[in-house]
Amino acid sequence: MPHVKEDFEYLRKLVLDESANLIEPSRDALFETRLTPLARTVGAGTLHEFVGLLREDKMPHLNRAVAEAMTINETSFFRDIRPFEAIRSTVIPELLRQKGAERRLRIWSAASSTGQEAYSVAMLLLEHFPLLEQWDVKILGTDLSRQVIEYAERARYRRLEVNRGLPARLLLRYFERSGEEWEVVPKVRAMCEFRQVNLCAQLPELPVFDLVLLRNVLLYFPEPDRTLVFEDVHRLMNPKGYLILGNSEQAEDSTDKFEVESAGDTYLYRPKVG
Image 1: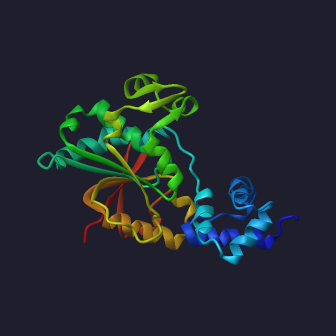
Image 2 (image 1 turned 30 degrees about the horizontal axis):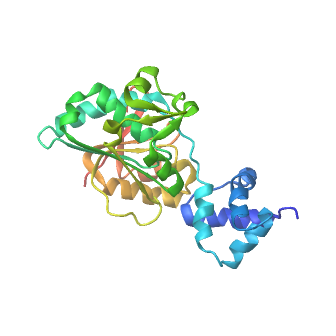
């Protein structure tokens, strides 16, 4: 049976309610691609049959599974090098000055997907700031999808994945060959922790962060949810800390919460106090 308009409307609303991910009608074909494997696991032969099961609400766990399947998880090591250059040249030197007495650093990769961003930050710190090996440093990666969190925790990547954005010298220094895969070395893994977190729901107890990377996720949130996310991030940040967004994202939804400064080609957002 061909898909009907109402099926896609139902799925778009479900995903929006569960994850605040706004799926435009022009992307309806993604439902077929991403949900067909999930439909088969519960015996649905077509997407229309699968939507029927969802409507009956006999398996409510499927709602979250649909939202996770539709989450954008595209990432790579050192994705868009410019923010990492800003972290190296501006952010970490300033945080070293701020926190020299405390010797404690907390970093949040707030849409970490399969972990490449968090591990990239860890490698950058080890490569350029060896002093931090004597500090208490922890990088928290969070994502809506349990599947990608488990992938990040596994810390093993295929050749295609390590070939995307990762310089050869860092591959040889911070990865070990494991059959057809490359595994992140223990020193880097020890700096990173991963948790399943929905940014648009009530957040679990989290530490105060000195640097937050919230890149390439707000694009998919409607305005009210973006505003709430900015409020939560502001609440969880060191008043002298840094927020980095994706290149095409701005903090226009929370101009009362952040002020902007530039570091080369990258905008850095600093919490407003008071």
